[in-house]
Amino acid sequence: MLNRTIHNNTPANCTGKIEVPGVGFIDVVCDNQSAGPGWFVIYQRIRRVPRLDRDWATYREGFGSMHDYFFFGLEKIYLLTSSLHHELYVHLVALNGSTFYAHYDDFKISDESNGYALSLGEWHGNEDNLFSYHEGMKFSTHDRNNNKYDPRNCASDLANGWWYKDCGICDFNGLFIRNQHCDFNVKEVKMLIRPKQ
Image 1 (cartoon, rainbow, N blue to C red):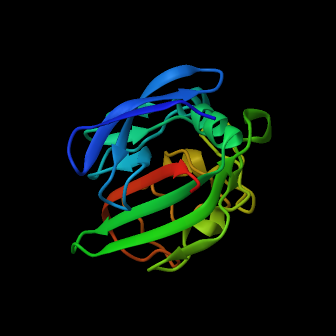
Image 2 (cartoon, one colour; image 1 turned 120 degrees about the vertical axis):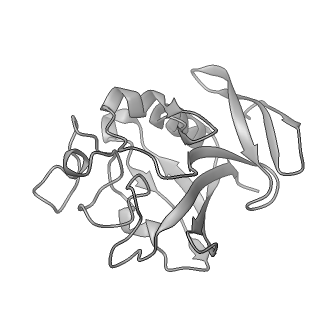
């Protein structure tokens, strides 16, 4: 069982520490507003940011600020989700204020030797099942191309890291989330996880 010490600061947000196997205790920021209590943030983009062209090692370790853009780190996500079942909640706010969500009941990623491949489980939400297009995909960066169908290096061409299957589907790291499967401009995106209830 993971050790989790979470201290509520406000009804909406909290900070605390969780023990990540193989890493030790690390600081986390929670979100008790978007989807109820118990969730903490593994990805956040709360405004338009410059291109996020980071290398594999940086995405593996994590980077950013909880006041703007934040990525928890592939290795920590792997260690957490391999030691205990987690669910994933994706929260999106469009430029017009509309909110969208997608909930997946068995979120995990593989280890680094398998490219941190994405697994989501069953979905429900109030928008198309957008993220499931990436199910089974390995993570890609400009220096490690793992996209499946596009002969290009999507991470290099789009100057982002993501679980690319090809270069045109629901890349939350893009300046806008807009394509044939994901046709709206977004001002806020969060990915939240918590141990499965």
